[in-house]
Image (cartoon, rainbow, N blue to C red; front, side):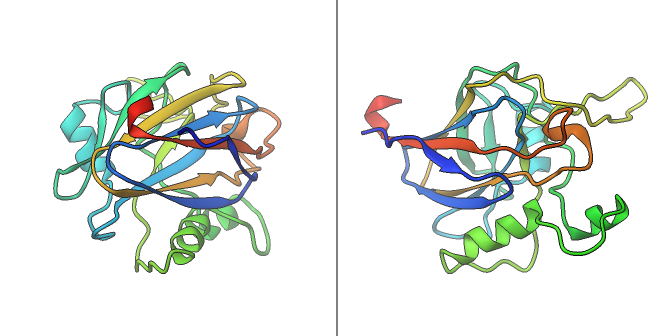
Length: 204
């Protein structure tokens, strides 16, 4: 049975275990919110979703319907089975951290996707000594002919969603990105809540 939509509060993170065949649907409630996303093997969190291998396996720098996130050992972790957004999900840029906010001129503590990742897996008793690269759902990062990247507002609309199906038992980590200085979370630079739900195998 599909769970009711759960709210992931702006600037926070959550780790969601999925059994093989289950899916998670991430809904961009306001249309402007980027969601940094990681996938870890439930059996071995050190076998994590690797963006460099994912780009190689899909021969694509964006993730689209039918594409898979693969692990550092090239094992399929999840498949993107449905995408109602325009489909620009960044795999290039790193998850934000405290050092990035300091570079942007922020003084003092600031929530970050890196911090959200470690907080979320920590609640499941998992510790990693590093932060893997993230799939940045809804993040609009155009790349020009010279290879330069831009950070511009998402093209997604309120209610757009992405559904990822687990190809093995996994843990999906979501961070409603706290970025409030650059316009990746919309022209207003305001982090927003998103929604997520878990869908059982027979419904996907």
